[in-house]
Image (cartoon, rainbow, N blue to C red; front, side):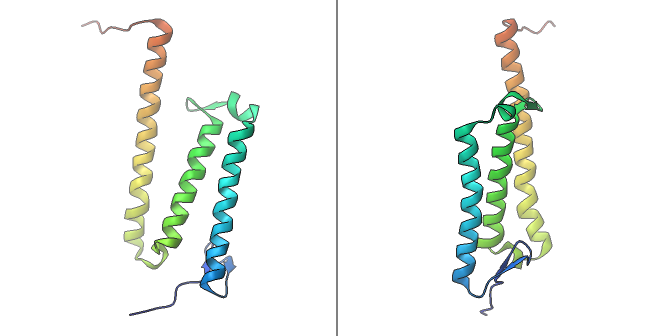
Length: 127
């Protein structure tokens, strides 16, 4: 039950002639995204480290988003999710996205509490 793999990336925007060319194209894309992450991590632009969004630096949000983009693309291309039924793709993709959003919410909520404890001293509940 062998079938040909799709030799395109970015939803057909870039097409290749062979699997080897496609692997190189994917490698180049992932390398560029990783290079952007490393470059931002080394330079740490001031406008990204001084500005906050939802209690976290913009630079950290960029790292999270780029990491999710790489993980999604690896799953999409190398785990052949594009060839699966849409319900299975949604179940595989949306579940981790929901869990990552939930984890970010919990981390921000708990970090805010710890920050307030350090800033204002011990907080006790008054019953």
